[in-house]
Image 1: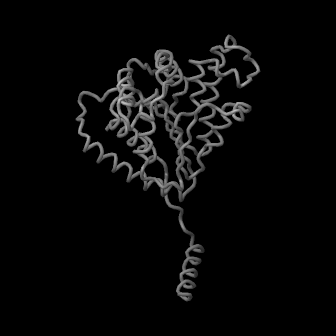
Image 2: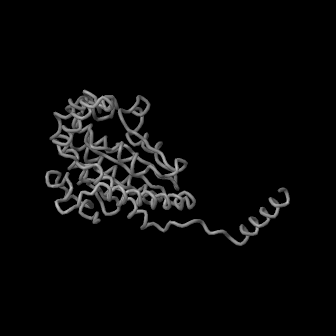
Image 3: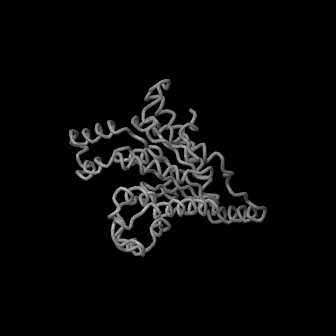
Length: 292
């Protein structure tokens, strides 16, 4: 499967033109898709073992999406086989008072994976150029020097933040962190269907929040905020992947393919054992047999 059509490295992204559905020429064979995803997971497990042993690179995978786009199920499915010892998920919701007392990237740094680990951001620092753009009033508790009221929230602030994010991601790259940025792109009609499913299916009632319906009225504003954020922060080093997500299994296949393709480009390998270390291993084996 070609993944290049979903990759953006500059400001050419138009959200209205980006597909949310499976391509017409794609055979929607769920069994085949599940088999390929299982193979991708098995391959990712092998990459993770080398990544963990080598401890030279850290992998940061972040997911952004409109509500009900399938971020949680995406994470639970395509990363189901990885070793928990080298894997963690961070969820970024409303910042705490402590977070608001620091810069907006402070809590992000605390949640970064170590080299050798895979870290998942379920939502991320991009919330600070998405939700805050649609709801500028949430910036007021941060006590930023130049913002006293919502009237002070200007495009200049967001332009600065786009620049901050580009520089921050470059900085992480310079220090051995690979960033994979996914926008799970669903249609407004599919979101409506999934909200209805949450309401009508008892086992899914817990997923439903009235706030989701309230936010839906800002659909157009969020779409514009996503388009601008992606165009302002998509680079060759840190591209955005805009994944059609009306079909969850198709989106999982694309994302798992992209992750493995990117890890395949890294010089991952188990650390080489020196002759002196080999001698120590033989000594340890000899000692172990003595005490058997």
